[in-house]
Image (cartoon, rainbow, N blue to C red; front, side, top):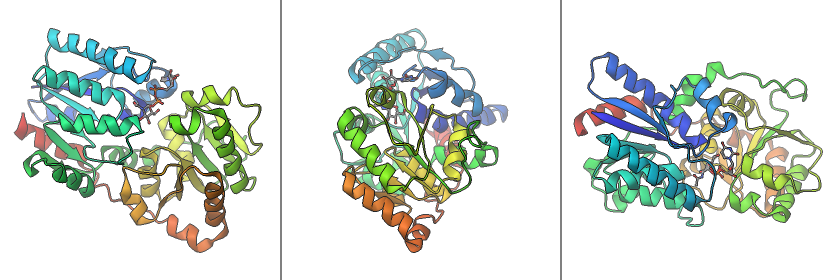
Length: 366
Ligand code: UD1
């Protein structure tokens, strides 16, 4: 049975890496499942894609749809047209999608329309915020998924509540956290580390890429100002996402304590996070990684699809109002007790064997 593994954008790559290793292991044990790795090309440059393949030992994709940049509608349509052509020429028996990016939804729709069943890894998470494209992607994908692999029991419960029967839901854990745990010993200092005077726990890591936070220059500059003020002159290392770089270009300046760097490869980025005093981000996936590594994380969003870390106390949703952001950073830095509460390493994401469990389930299902 040939299974398409779909990967399109940066947060997909760490989720598929252990999946592919699990397929190889299954094959070398004489298993009948094999995969075709389909890269949609949504992210295409070395810093957003190639570096992750190299560092995580992901083989070259079997097919690259080379969709490139565009609006979400253009990317969705382009991926669907090209993936449909691929499936018509050489059909697969199952389409396995991960996460919540445009590529996830576009390939799920295309496969299902051709009668090819869909399996969704990281199914069932919900923020309730329809202004985020990822929430629409998750809801559309889950509405046409045959088999749901979930990262937490909360996600499984969300699916049950929406009417999915228990026999289609498999709580397996989080493949991205499996990658994190498997690579922690390999994390490595970025080249700029010493030159920037970074030591353990004397700096923050900042990542911002949500359109609502970074697309408009004025509110974006105000956000950066509040972060600089709250962090009291401590270095703030800011790997700049390409979307964010476009807005940064038109700002007259940015705070002195900011250290702007390119998007980092996986091992360097997580080295920085592991050793940081704290992380300030609008990402969802990073909040799972900081929770497992015990690094306090302030999330500049009003909602989350990943409530476990909030419940554990390691992640705080601080929204996007500048006075609140300033106050929250100040209280993190000003209170040892608060800091300790937020640095509690915690893993609600399964036992590190998500991919083996997915293979076991697939053997029965397909
Ligand atoms: C996408 C995902 C988001 C994920 C993020 C991680 C969707 C809806 N969003 O958002 O969930 O958290 O990726 O990065 O799928 N670009 C490059 N080089 C690349 C890729 C993109 O320069 O290799 C540029 C594009 O031209 C575009 C911008 O980066 O201007 C944004 O890329 P895009 O894939 O449209 O969406 P993201 O905002 O990255």
